[in-house]
Image (cartoon, rainbow, N blue to C red; front, side, top):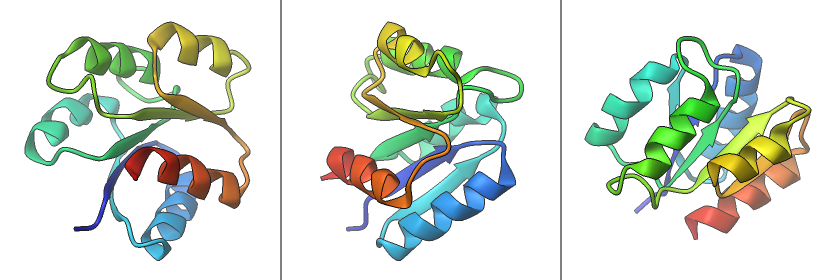
Length: 119
């Protein structure tokens, strides 16, 4: 069965690049552009990993991560922050997400970090 990656990102360019790369690697990909949607979407289709931008409309990636990690039904889903924030490492540590990938990123780094958490 194909591994499922949920991309929570509002930048269409990033969405396109990440989706193409991951689809080419054989993953199933879903995209959310409004952070509030993530909680309902996860109930319907649980992802194997979440790629989460910090700067999302409606609700920040930091708040999303804190809520998901605090809920025992979603706490074990690997979350990878993907952001250009200068505080990315600090925020990743404080929210206890699994990893982070600074923007701009190398395609190989994207492939490697996703593979690390879905296999």
